[in-house]
Length: 76
Image (tube, rainbow, N blue to C red; front, side, top):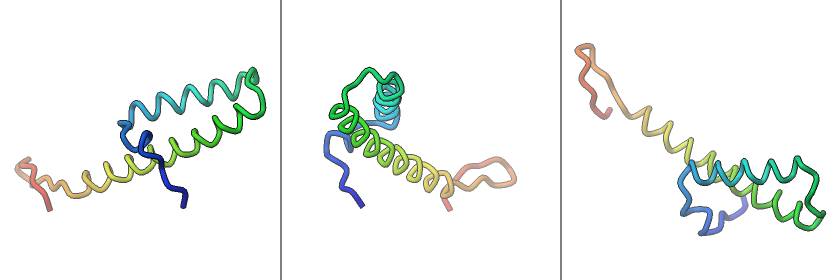
């Protein structure tokens, strides 16, 4: 597994997704040279991994929430 750089780890899910979308747009445009495309692809891959980790963490938190029959919310 590739280590996620600290600058990416510090990003919120939304900011990381925003950067990832920008990278995808740049790659799809075809207006970036090969070396820059490789750099963008590599960073995009790291951003995707970071976003997936954030989503996995959110799912775990949601799975810990218990709603009783009377509508009260608590942790399991």
